[in-house]
Length: 367
Ligand code: PMP
Image (cartoon, rainbow, N blue to C red; front, side, top):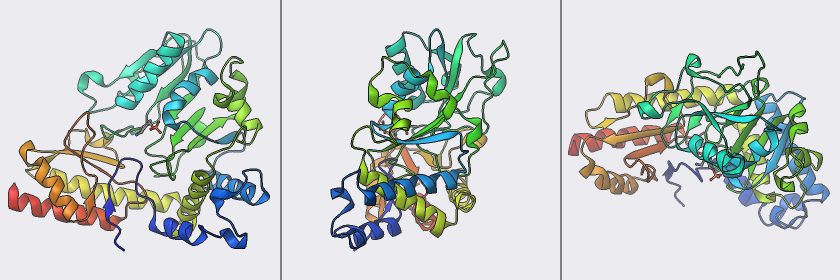
């Protein structure tokens, strides 16, 4: 069996140790004589799995006790609708910082559902190569919350600071973050956020699961006229089991949390590894005449590293040869072209070393 290095943006690589454990437990979960996939979500065995996953995530991210953790479905895209439904309240407007394609989709969904969305700042004019600075963020006077995307997965653009959310009248509104592509890559001060959400299929586990972390006092803002499954309050009251949750994805997420805690040694250790991995890759890009990345150095993503070749006629050869070398899924997003290496938590440092060696070799032969 060979496992290649997988640089896919999502669904992304999972830690081999996690997959091995899932394989061991596949047919007969801890002597119960059945697979986790076949368990009732209301059974004692499954509830124990679900509760351990939540407790481990709470410990990893140091989630304060006045925050609820929800395990829900519908992808991060569903949260583009769930957030305004849960947080807008009467009369308020959703505010956004737009730094790329995912933030834009969140804006479009809020507009679609509520007719209005205020773009408090945008990096669109610069072509999304640097995030707006704090002084460029202009909240509307009726802002209900400020939504941003700390790591834009397609552009490879990441915030280097946490935006302040004070309106002109002095009221501080909740900060909402789509952390789909950077959650668990480094420690996080959850207390600075009102809502955090993340699709699982990058740093958490398989697709089909979304983690939402919401400050308890915000649960009361939920509208009464929204679909039950979108309601943070109802999900919290039901322990995320209003209906059948994504049981197997939740279980695998639990194995990933366990791996992060016990194999990696927590988020400080993960942070240091991620820093080394991304430093190596950007150094290779910057030191080359063939590859380039346009993002302002302080806003370069440590998870998603897009780059282009000086001569795009070499793109297809680069991808074919990379695949032959066991380096998978380096093609950039269809909307931007070029290459993108997603180097999430489960992509080992050895994968980055192999990619850098391949890039250097390709440049020497073809550049
Ligand atoms: N937000 C971000 C930052 C993403 O990277 C993605 C997926 N790549 C999404 C939202 C959409 O996620 P999903 O496909 O789970 O709806």
